[in-house]
Image (cartoon, rainbow, N blue to C red; front, side, top):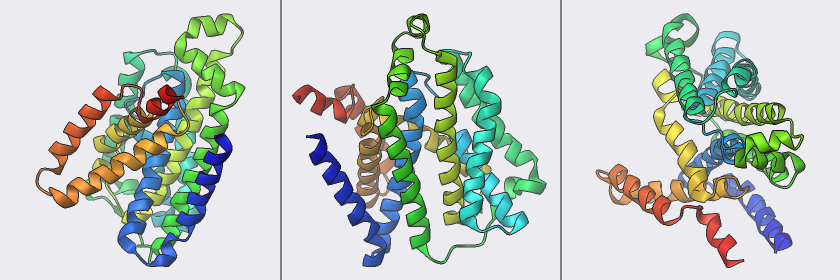
Length: 300
């Protein structure tokens, strides 16, 4: 079963790698966004799905990466691909600074503190206008070739998926799950809970920072309300929960499912799609408490 799944996934990777050559811009853009959402969902899942430290503000790293990348492009003239990697480094640096004190908080206190951090970063982007453009936003040189953005997003999605696959099947992943189930008991058995939480926090920060930089290049315009959007925050939480939090495939399935549902509703019901989207999410969460992957687990 596992070997068959690996063959299917490998086939999908090969197929998606040829999509830009088919010259279907709409489909290419849709898959590009699915890649981005898969990265965000999988990154959130590395921390919140496995350790149980529920984050309400992971968009912080997405926005910091976008602005970090944008500053290197607009102020220093760097190529967008290198700048996006540096955006990931900015997000990682922020996680290194705030991770230790925030992870000492638990439950709703950690969740609220992460939400507060995201709003602090949004206000900082508004205040430091000389660097970020403030409320006027920051314009970036547009990328003429959509394929470059597509392959960049796809590469990051592949890397974070491989990282999540390793975590799901490693001693490190089992340690994170032990922390989620009972942190005190995990510490009593010799698991270095502080260290493992910190590593998971860092891993969950760097990938959103990179795709934030790529997304900013795709838009060629950055604004604090967009880069630290509450909508991104919500999607980063809903997608892994719908697919199955604490699993490798759950966030990917959730990203694909919600992206496709959202697109269909937007096309069919342009004036009511947000309301219908919300209703469908509520129904799915109520009737699939363990996510879509939970259906397959019960069958096994």
